[in-house]
Image (cartoon, rainbow, N blue to C red; front, side, top):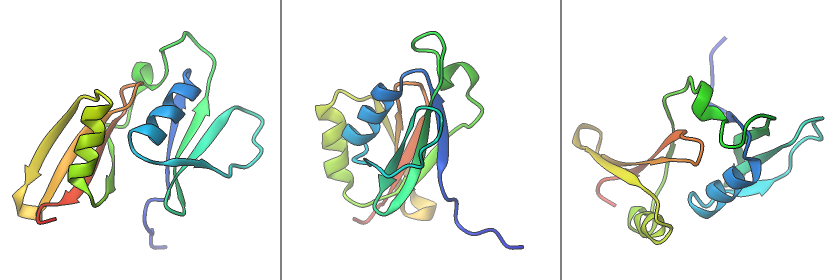
Length: 126
């Protein structure tokens, strides 16, 4: 067996609507088709791929992944860094920029409302 590319990330949250709003507003993803599972959730698409699956869970409001987070981060590659930074600033989002010269990328690190760390990698010479 040989593994292919990572298919998606699955997140659990007590704040489903807030996370769906954040991923669409801040990362520009779009909600899309999802199987009719017997639990609440959403699939968020990057292009044609359902890259982020979100599962709604019961619990104290505001206690989702940040209470049981095991994944340090997940990442996307992208283009349009300047526009993305402007979107982050317009939305009042905290972010951290890391220049990785050895790989010719600039990482923009962001955190969703549940504390999940996402970095978006842009070509440094864009």
